[in-house]
Image (cartoon, rainbow, N blue to C red; front, side):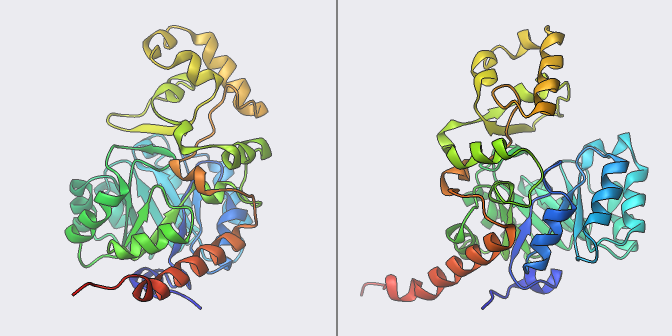
Length: 322
């Protein structure tokens, strides 16, 4: 079975599920696995590492995948977009920055343009630049975002861009999230944290285990970890991660942390060694819904099956009173 929507039609996929382009986690292997399972995998281009991008696009093989960029950081390595487009990805996803400087080049190259938005104003900009798909990202999600919650943002984005397929992101980790997104008017979902806790996801096993053990109550939003790694994002973006010993030590003392360069060195070492008492595990509030580390293809099938069951049974469960 499958759920057909405008998103599945636009992307040419079987299930309305997209992989979030998580930096260093959504590599070629994970993206290809999601696509081959009937979803749409997106490699996390992150801040731009040419050697990594080449390797991971090659690793995706003949799978139909996209590549996602942190848009504001593209000025550091502007030629990386050209490098990616030369390899003919099915789509390019732009998040956290102006769409206009890059939209025409992406469309001319024959790739679909996916724009992640956090506000209605962002939505109108994406629509004005001929976005093929819009991702409405709520603040429940892991990693960077702004402030609006998914439940209220998604229908507002749908209303602001009625002709464009919309995917909901932030707080989605099971079939209930997909079914809810469809009821809100979205055409599918973009999922990060649930796929982080999969066999194929890049990264340390200990990070995945922390996601499985975590509660959404133990996530935190802010710029603490950006300060620690000396990569502070432009306002108003802040990131959601799991709390750990480092966050509990420095939370509320961000200005003081900036005066301790030795902490940046310690943090970098911790990231490279998988010491997550210091380094952050980037994860969203939906960690409560994650209890295992299965193959990514199984996640796609499981979420779709759960959503189909919920949607099919909704008319029997709820009846209007007279």
